[in-house]
Length: 135
Image (tube, rainbow, N blue to C red; front, side, top):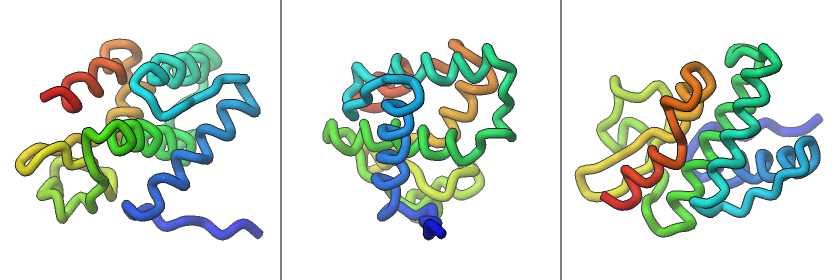
């Protein structure tokens, strides 16, 4: 049996890596942790939406996709993972971890992926990234 990882900042990169592997295996999409890869992630999310898949059916997948988006911040030097309560986001974020992008600035890529699944293009991941990474 595969050991399940705890949803803590130290494990975010492993969650993200699972999406990189799955995207390649299932969709033939190569994700490279760059800002330019975020539209590819959106294409996968859009295919779920097109197929009638609900967020409740793929909670773990969406969580890992959120970790992937967070890892884009980390690897591009635009942020670090923090526990939600350590980043003073408790009550604002439902995810257990967020990205701190500056001394007083945080964003929540995990919840953003869930919103992208729910709302479609109006919750654009590239736009989200550019808004927080370049602020």
